[in-house]
Length: 254
Image (cartoon, rainbow, N blue to C red):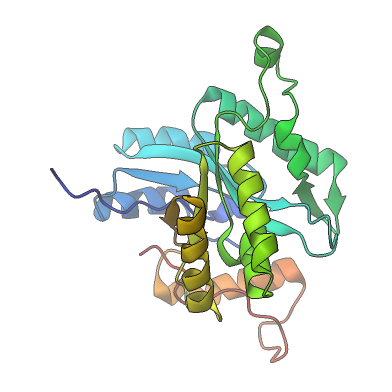
């Protein structure tokens, strides 16, 4: 039996608007170079590049995976939403992801961030396909926990393991057999503490772990150009010593 290759499930391309500079063709070529059989496109709160990505990946022999990096509403503090990753399994999931992103953009923006409310996943879809055969907005989707920026990671790092456990149980019930605890190593502070504690939680609840690497730029030398892009989106100055630096030089296409 051949050893399965690692594939990337987190990629912010140039279509991510605020924090990605990877061109789609370059990403697909890089996946081919590393002999990765599949690649996910998970731009922030949008599917703008999906058609181009899908057709180009198919032409180059790489299986395209559709998805999106999203904000999840934080009911305990509306100023600090959580992150999560949604991946599409089938046509039903694609329609649901489109509906969720549209609903968040039109109905639930906070400080310019479209946020998905957790209770929406348990509601019925309004798509034409759902009118023929009703289904929930969680169907056809895989949910990754968002690593340290998700609700589980955030509460673990705040020391509230019981609340993190509650969040994990709730997501597992909403996405049965389609919910994964997400871990990453990009050089961020507190990563090892998070990984140690969330791995124990995953074992305790019998939930699967998935390792992802959040790609923001193609090669290590692109880090500074990416930071300039982020500064433009944030209205910041690259040379400001007090600006919050959210990314690391490790977030290239490995």
